Image 1 (cartoon, rainbow, N blue to C red):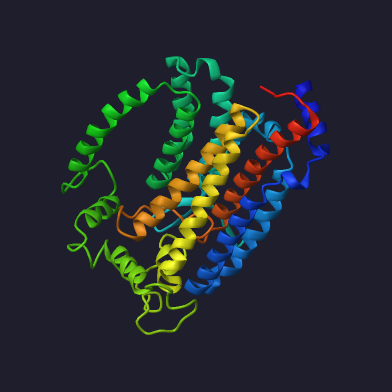
Image 2 (spheres, rainbow, N blue to C red):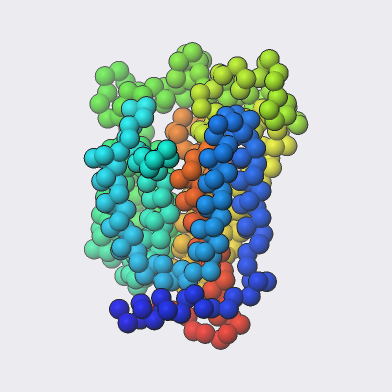
Length: 388
């Protein structure tokens, strides 16, 4: 407790050097967010103001966290974990229901989606947990603890229901565990089990009358496997998304265009500012716009990973790897859905899709990542020691 109070007293007063600030990462994030705001404004002008508000709040929070000692934040990992469970339980009991799912908490005229914040909190928790059990991480008892604590928030998100977010967080936490030193033999055994189970699972869920997943989830899988047969029902949006991306050609039709053959203007995609925002990017900014968005995401992931490789301790490194995995996986899945490579999942495109909680949560993660880099450079300049 004394050590915790000492860190709380000192972490505000570190004299970071401006040259050590990760400006390339900050610029890439801001540019990608700016593109997102522009495209959201074209897809749904009403959502643009809220996204700008999310940018302003997120930037302030990011700036504060970027100069806050991430070690002190990680020391609160059990407090954050417990608070997360309480909030997720609150969602289940008192949350707002929309389109058959209860995922939001209403705060005045705004809605808060705790599952988005869960992505960041669980990365912080996993990084600290693995750091604390670094030498014993491959012991069965420690692994059982890790997966048991991981399962609680994932189950609460799954029953909202939100299968895609559950899988997204679960995959990222497994990646963090592997980067933290999980023996490759566990990976081999897991793959030997997961691959056949997945094949059996898919063969069952496509059958009429199955009870493993909800009907709408089955419809999405069937629409992905047989797009032509479901082109007027569940596969309608994906087919129109593919058409929109192709119609943009090299340079696109331009933002806020009023062309009659626009998929967006014809309202052929429901809520295009969220899950299918990449379709709007393709239609209005063309191939160049799509490559720019993909390039910026790749740059952000690369810069975060590079920060992780230079971190002062394993906790900071795993935090960065987790953030990189979360952003990279979300971007891949969102674009895969928009282009028909994967079934519709409802995963947002980081920094681009509309969503106040999602954007602020991502900026929280970026702020902590920037501090990981600042801490390493600060210690190099001042000669301070590493903290375990």
